[in-house]
Every structure is written in structure tokens, then in C-alpha cells.
Image 1 (cartoon, rainbow, N blue to C red):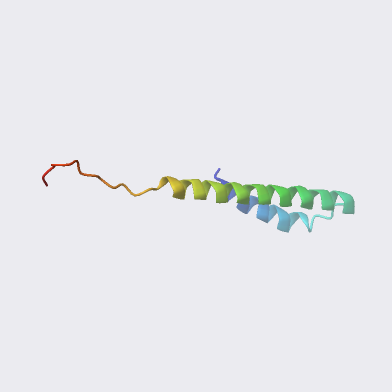
Image 2 (image 1 turned 60 degrees about the horizontal axis):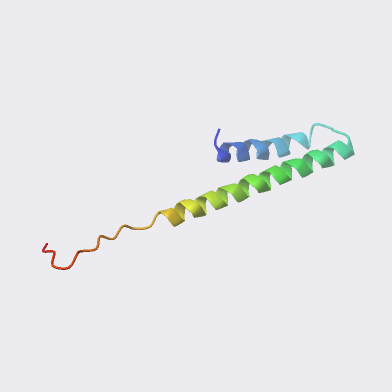
Length: 69
């Protein structure tokens, strides 16, 4: 499962668990853990995107002196 899919599932989980009727303490703990997981995954996606963009350096071929086209 990709990170994007996990992020979507966590988002759906946050929507659903609010209506499940957990006690207040458990409800707050689940919200905290879900929020931290979402933040962590979003940060990893951002870092991975930046690394991928940095590696996409355009190739420039240099000619040696005296080389004819």
C-alpha cells in the first residue's frame, strides 16, 4: 500500500472514529495518534518528493576539445 493510500485511509479513520462513541479520554488519544501519523506520513511524502526532484538533474553533454560534430 502506498503512502498516499495510507494517508487516505487515516483520513477516513478520523472521520469515522468521531462517531463511534468512544469515551472522552480514548477519543482524544485516538485523535492525537491519528494526527501524529498523518503529519508523519505527509512529511515523509514531502521529503521524498524533494529528493526525487533533486535527483532529476538535466543531463548536459560536454564536448572534448578538438571534437567535431
